[in-house]
Length: 145
Image 1 (cartoon, helix red, strand yellow):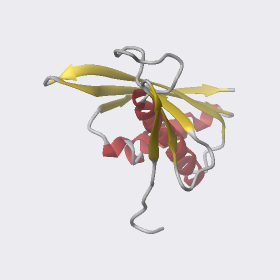
Image 2: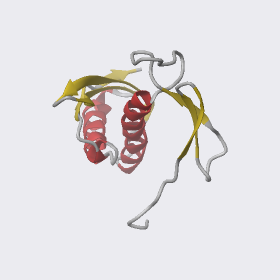
Image 3: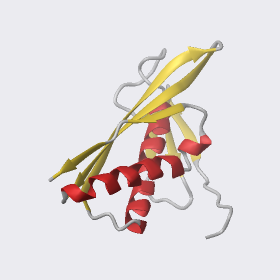
Image 4: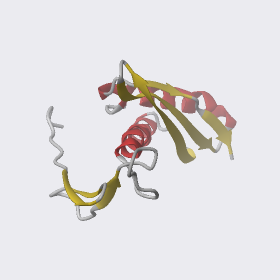
């Protein structure tokens, strides 16, 4: 794998506080808007704040999938909830903390320790988490199904 990669994203204003995100290499366009907590924010549209938290949570999943494969973890399912805390720090809005709550479903009790090891390695290796200054914590749950 090359040591450098570039990801191009374009945003176009539509109206009010609404825009569209696109990329030359992707077919799908997605809406983006000011969240409703801010003046003139729009409800029911993904905001930059949602995308920020989603990038961290999505990176956890994709990293988990790679690490699980490398460690030969036979899991039944993976899902993760995430919550970002937006607050004012030093007179600036920041997402100061993101809490990740992954749930890994395993088929055998004897895989519990390995599943925990894999999710912890995944959180440490996530390139998005490693690229932001927000505090990131994780509360994993391992379930046998």
